[in-house]
Length: 458
Image 1 (spheres, rainbow, N blue to C red):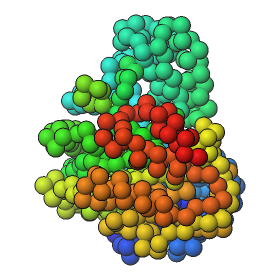
Image 2: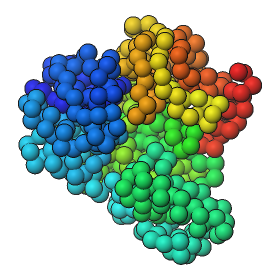
Image 3: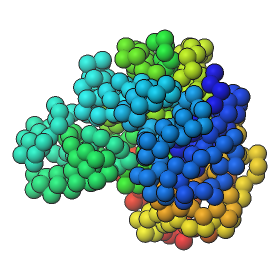
C-alpha cells in the first residue's frame, strides 16, 4: 500500500478520499487554490499545499503545479477524484512518466473510453449496443443532416468530449439542425477544448441507468449493480437511487456479466461507470463510460457494503480483487440527494455565498453503513466559492425497501438544517413525494412536472 497520496481535487470528494486514506493508514496531502484556502476539508489532511489562484485553469487543472506538488510532498500516488483531471489521459500518462501512480484507469483506457465516438464503436464490437446514430463524428451541418435523415428525427447532437450536459442539443426537424449544430459545437469547444460532435437518435421518455464496475490489474472485473439517475435538470443529475426500479434481477445479471467480460478484455483497471439510456420499450442502449468515480457512488456502496474509494486505492497499489461476482449482493435500497447551492426558481442558477447554518447529526458524516449518511466538507460559516460547481454535499439514506428509503430521505431532508443560500432541498422533497417517483414510473423529462409541484409549495 502507498505511504502517502496526493488528493488532486477539492471540497466534498477530497474529504471522501482523505477518509479512505486514513482508513488504510495512508497519509494524505490536500492541494488547494487560493479561493479554497479556508475550506474545512483541509483540516483533515496530513499536509496541505497551495497550487494556484481561484480559477481552476490556474490551479485544479494546472498539471505542472499538481505534479510539482506530488514531488515536493514525496507522494507515491495521486487520486484525482471526479471532474477536473480525473479523465485526462495526458495527465495520467505524465503521472506515470514521473513514477507517480495515477489512482484510476491506465492512460490507454482513458483515451479509448474518453472519446464517446470511439467508446461507442469499441463497446459495440464487444457486444454492448449503443443508441442508433452516426457511424462517427459529424464534421459539418451537412454531415449532421445526412446522418439525421438516416437515423430519423428527433435527434440529439452531442459533444464527443466531456459531459455534464454541455455540448448537447435536441433537434426535432431539419430546420433546427444548423443553429443547433453551431451552438453545440461552440459550447463543447468552450467547455472541453474540442468542438467535435456526433449524432444519435433522441429517445423520448428515456431513463438514465448506469452500472458501477471495478477492475484490478489481473483482468478481474466485477459490477456492483445499477443506479437510476433519471431525476435531472439541464441534463445534470439531481437525485439517484440504487437499484433501479425498472431493471430486473435477470437483466442486471445478464448485462452486468456482458460488461465485466468486455472490460476485462480491454484490461480496465479501477472504478468506472457504464451509462445507458433505457427506452420506453425496455431496451438499454450504451451511452458512454465515465472512467472515474461518480458523484453518486455512495448509493452503490450502501446497497453492497463495498467501499469503492478504498478499493480504488487497493487496486492501484497492485492488490487483487478479493471480491468475486458471487460475493456481491444488493441489499435493500439507497437514495442520494445532491445538495446544491442553486436557486430552483431561477432555472437552478448557482447561488454561492455564506452558509450561516449547516447542521446535521454527527453520526451522519460519512457513515459507511447508513442508514443516513452525509458526505460533505461544509460547515456553518463556510463561504461557497464562485469558481466551482455548486455542490455542498450529498445526503444518502439506506433502508430495507424503496418505500422505506423514500420516507427516510424525506425525514432526513427535514432534519438537515441549511440556511444562508438557496438549495435544491425543496425540489428534492417535491420529487420524493410525487406520485410519479413513488410509483417508480418516471423519466428524464419530468423535471417540469416536479417543479410545478415545488412552486405550489413555496
